Image (cartoon, rainbow, N blue to C red; front, side, top):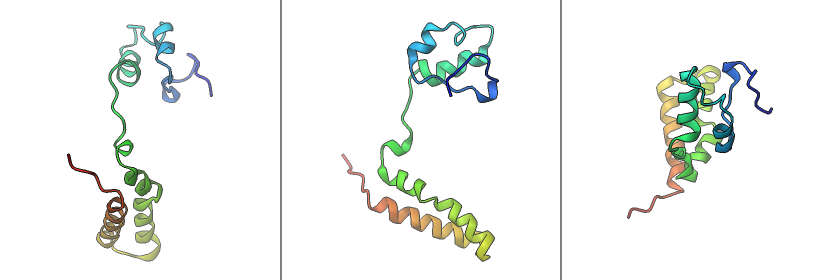
Length: 104
C-alpha cells in the first residue's frame, strides 16, 4: 500500500527511498520529534544489516520456525519447556553447523 500522510501513526512505514524522506518536509517536520527520530534512525542515519544477512544458517533456522515448533510441542505433546528448548537449540545448532564462519 502506498504511503500517505493521512495514515495513522500505528500503520506508518518508512519509505524505502531516502529521497522520498528528504524531499517531503512532512517527514522531517520538527513539530513531531517522534517522526523525525523515526526517519533519522530508519532512513537518514547509518543502518546496520540484520544479523541473518551475515549467515544463511540464521535465515534457514528462522524459516524452519524452530521456536514455534518448540512451543507447539509443549502445548500439543506435553513436552516440558526445558526439553523443548533443548531440542530447539540443538536443531538451531545443527542448522548453523552447516554454515561455518571462517575466522580471519
